[in-house]
Length: 186
Ligand code: ATP
Ligand code: MG
Image 1 (cartoon, rainbow, N blue to C red):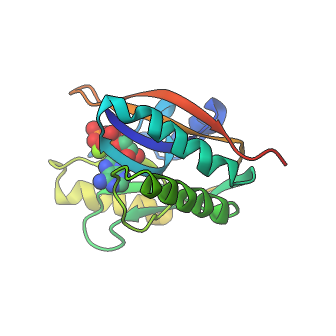
Image 2 (image 1 turned 60 degrees about the horizontal axis):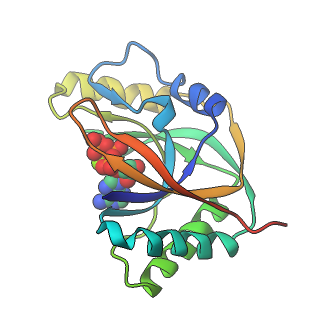
């Protein structure tokens, strides 16, 4: 199964985040509001029988992390220059909480010899990807729109992290929560 560990967002915040990008922007594959999340670790293909270990790692990580407030307060893109590939919302308040949760997840996965993409975490909320077949003009339009976007802060309380299964299809990915791990109670 294809797995990742993430912070899920409440529907109202997700709807507001998705609505920030102008409807008219060309050349984008938008993330459906119900799919919006902040990735903490991407495991990718994982043998089914390891799911229990992955959930144990998420539980252990969550027990070490206090709940926190997460605020999205700006738009940005990857890469920073040249043709954009990913459009995201950046995190103001709560960045330390996300980084802390991500670091705890990474060490709990390592402790169990579970494989994941272990590059440094760059916490963000992906809103859209620029289509591979988008024209240069479309990509430039997206880049300019991101630059111009002003984001009224969107805030939510984070009380749990989730182990998610991702099933890819031509219609887009379908994510299913496999477990929810409550953050340490205060
Ligand atoms: P699609 O691949 O069809 O565009 P997706 O990227 O949303 O859909 P997945 O590829 O299953 O679906 O990824 C699930 C989550 O993990 C997404 O947030 C994605 O950005 C992130 N992710 C995917 N691959 C990696 C990777 N190699 N390293 C870090 N994060 C990743
Ligand atoms: Mg992907």
